[in-house]
Length: 640
Image (cartoon, rainbow, N blue to C red; front, side, top):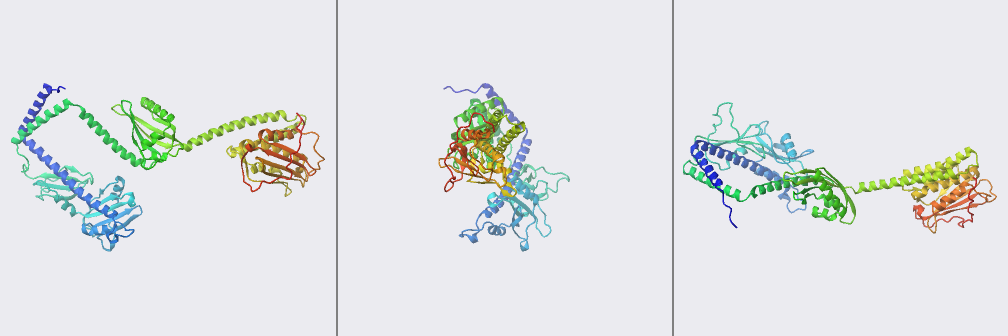
C-alpha cells in the first residue's frame, strides 16, 4: 500500500513556524529569562505547597489508621479496644498538641497536652466544613493565647464503620516551618505560606527580611493554591537571573530546532490520522461516565428500587451503561450478580417489546419514558415493575435515558382488586334492580295500598341492609351471625326477656348468598311478628345452624310460645314462594316447612357454593328433625 506523502504546504508551514520560534527566542532573551524564572517559581510554589499538604494529610491518616487499629496493650484478646490507646502514644511521639473525636452528642473522647485531661477548644466552623465536604479541612491558625501554644487544627470526617463524627488534630504552628524546609528547592528562593485570608503561617528563605523590604501596601500574588487546605504559596527569586537558569546560547538554537522538528512531527501525525481527537473525546466521555457512575452508586445505595442509564448510539445500538445493585434486590437475585443480566433474564417477551417501542418513541420525540411491565423473579414469581426515565441527546447524536425502577406489584394488585370490585358492584346493582322489579311485579296487589307499600318497603329495606353489610366488608361476603343480628335486631328482646336465640359455628357467606339469606330471614321474622311466636308475649324463636353432612349449611328456624297452629294453611302467600325461590335458585339448596303444634319450623339448606368458609367443629350439630318435609310446590300465584 502506498504511503501518504506530506503536502508541501504543511512542510512550508512547519518551517515558517520553526523560524518564527527561533526569531522570537533569539530576539527576546530577557522575556525568556523572566518567563523561565516565573515558571520555575510557580513550579516551586506548587511543589512546596503539595509537600506541606501531603505531610499534613499523612499526619491525619496516621491518626485515622490508629483509630481503626487495635491497641498493642490488648493484642491477642478476643475484643481489643481500638484507637484511643494508640492515639495517646502518637500524641507523644509525633509532637501533636491534641487529638479528639466529636459526634452528634459532642466530644466523645480527647487526648491533649493540657493538664488534667482537659479537652482542646473546638473549631466549630472547621468541623462543620469537614462534615459537609466529607474530606479533610484545615481550620484558621490560632496564636498563642490563654495558656495554649500557637496551633493549627485539622479536621477529617470519620467513616460510618467507625460510627461517624469528626476527628480533630491540633498541631503546633512551628511544625509548618519545619515542613516547609524539608523539600529540596533551587537556591535563591523565598517561600511564604498563608491561609485563604492572607494570614502568614510559615516562611522559608535565605533573606528573612525580603518581604519586609517591599513597598508598604503591596503584596506578592500567590503562585499556587492548595486543593486540600485552600492555603496559598507565594515564591520569589532573589537578585538577578538565578544560577540554575539555562543561559541563552546554543540552547536557544537547540530549542528552536526541537520546536521545528516537533511541529513537523505533529503535522505528520495529524495528517496521517485523525483518530487522536476522537480517542480524546471517547476518553473524556469514559471518565465522565465513570465519575457519574460512582456518584449514582452512592445515591442508589440509599434509594428504594434501582436506577439505571441507557444509551442509544447514533447507529441505533442500545446498551445499559449503568445499573444499580437494587435490581438484584427487586428480582430476588443473589448478591453480586450482574444487575444488567438479571434484568435481561427477567423480562417477558411482551414487556421487552413494549420497552423497545417506548424507547424508540422517546428517542424520536425526546419525551420522558413512563412504562410498566411484568417480569419473572428468580423464584418464579410474577412481579410488576414501573419505570420513569428522562431523556436528553448528546452532541454526537447519541441519546441517553436516566431512570428509576420501582416495584409496583402491590399497587398493580390493588388496581386489579379495585377493578374487580367495580365489576362486582355493577353486577350487584343490576341484580338488585332485577330483584326489585320482580318484587314489584310479584307482590300481590289484592290488599290495601298501605299494606302493599309496607310489604314492599320491608323487603326493600332487607335488601338495603344486605347491600350495606356487603359494602362494609369490601364485597367479600359477610358473617352469618352479622346477617342474623342486623335482620332480627328489632325483635331481640321484649320487656327484658329474650325473644330470639341463635347459635352455631362461625360461618362466612359468599358475596352472592348474603342478600338471599337476609331476605329469607326477613320473610320468616315478618311472618312470626304477624302470625307466629313474635306476635305475642312469651313467644320465642330459636335459630340454629350447622354444617350439613353432605356439604353446605343447614339453618333451622323454630318458633314456640305463639298462637296455636292447627296444621298447614290451606294456601301459601308470596313470602312462602319467595323463600322457596331464593333457597333453590340463589342458594343452591332448598327449604322445608313443618307446622307443628308448638309453632312453625323451617329448615333452609345452603349449597356448598353459598359458603365461603365455615368453622371446623368436632362434630356437626344435628337438628332434632332432619327428615325433609313433603311440601308441595306452591301455586303459580297466591295472596300473602
